[in-house]
Amino acid sequence: MAKPKRTIIECRSYSLPPHFPLLLLSGDHWKISDIPSDRLHFHNCIELGLCRSDSGSLMVFDEPVPFHEGDVTMIPKNVPHTTYSTPGTESLWSYIFFDPQALFRNMLPMAWKNFDLSRHAHRGMQVVFDRNQYPRIYQLLYAAIHELEEQKPSYQISVKGLLLSLYIEFFRVFASSAAAAGPKFTPPISENPSGNSIYTGAKPPADKEHEKGNALTIAPALDYIELNYSQQFSMEYLADLCHWSPTHFRRVFRDIMHASPLDYVNHTRISNACNLLQSTEDSILDISEAVGFHSVSSFNRCFIRIMQMSPREYRKTTQSLDNGVDSQYIVGYSGWMQPETPKKQLY
Image (cartoon, rainbow, N blue to C red; front, side, top):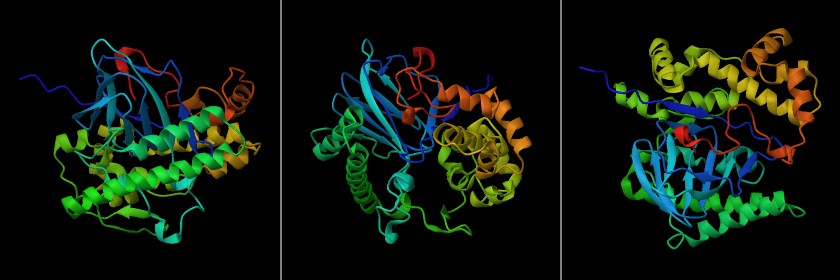
């Protein structure tokens, strides 16, 4: 018997600017093909989408959800998905990627420090919001996109306010759905030694489909790496966050991420180093220490292996870019800045 085709899930990380952790992808070229992708992907931040024209399907986990012109989509971080248009069409989109914890820092009371929509992610979650049924969600996202495109004085403050209001609207929808469905959609959380929230639910099942098809099985480790990449921690600690043995954790992590946990940590560190090289004048030594490397020599070796150039060359290259793109919207090595070809379209 032939082996079943393996499900491939890719991680598409965006290194967001620290001073304004947000990315806008918009314009006439952001059209989605009608050819379904052969793989799913997920991001390290929230993806908001506004369908400008036509229709199609948003595949979340392994479930297609239809969308139409005017609909808003909201994909939490670490949720596998892809998008394709109705046959014979190319739907036009605008996207915002952002990190709510960083963007809303100092805007929320302490009681809301663990305010995170990703904890409500599950199969069957609502990801498409009809313009007529949720007019306020549409209006807030449309206004935020318009502000980002116009960039009038104080637009960043305006965008933060609009997205905070939008985030609260999403939170109300998810909270209402969770209350109606029971507590299974809200995993219990506690504080880890670093003070960051972690999942402490029951040990997830270890069947093959669950491991390959659901990136949420390693979400506790991904969340911890995202928040603590500059610190030193063991792979055993990451395994414990997921309630697995180190051996099982490494196998599942590689199945989902197509990289070892250590390689993923190093990619995260280098991605953030790229951001600092672009947005600051800090020395390479200071940046290497800020992202978690013991020495500048190990940082340089890892940077060259991943980026195919030295940190100094990378800084020189990005500073000399003159392609009409505002530098605050230049992202790291692995996110998409242009629509892909129909063969492997990954939004």
